[in-house]
Image (cartoon, rainbow, N blue to C red):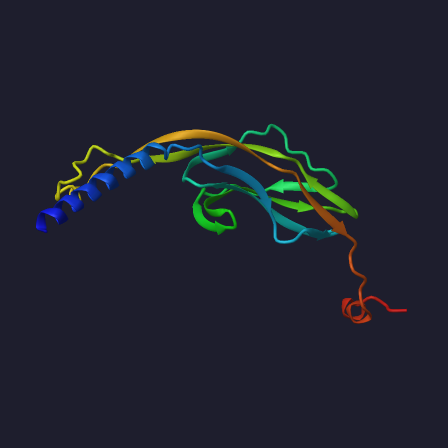
Length: 188
C-alpha cells in the first residue's frame, strides 16, 4: 500500500514538472500594447478648456516609453502640452483584463468656436520588461525555496498608435437674470 502511494506521488510530481516546463516554453507570447486618449467628458463648452491624457496600456511592465509622431496638429481648436512628470505606472482592471497603465503626456484642449476639436492619431514606442523563469533548479531539492535568486529579464520594444479623438464643442449656456444682476450689468 505504501509503495503504491509513493509511486503515485512521484508520477504526479513528474507530470506536474513536465506541465510547468511546457507552459514556460509557450509563455513567450507577443506582449499586448495599445494607446488611447482619455478625458472626463466628450464635450467642451466654447471658451473652456479640458485636460486630455494619452495613456499607454500593456500586459507586462514598462521600462520606458516615448511618442514617435513628428507633428501634433489639432483641427478646430488649440492644444497645449503640459510639462512632463516622472513616468509612473500602475495596474488597472479593464474589461479585457488587468493591464499596466502609463500616462505618457497630457494636453490642455480649448476652442473658441462651436463645432468639433479633433486630436490627431499619435504613434508611440515602448520598451517593455519580460521576466524570464529560471528552470535550472533541482525539482526535488528542499533548499531551493530558501536561497534568494537573481531575477533575469530581457526587454522588447513595441510600437502602437492612438486613434484620433473627436471632442464636440457646444455653445455657452445663456445667462439667467440672477447671474446678470450679480455681475453688475444692467438688466433690461
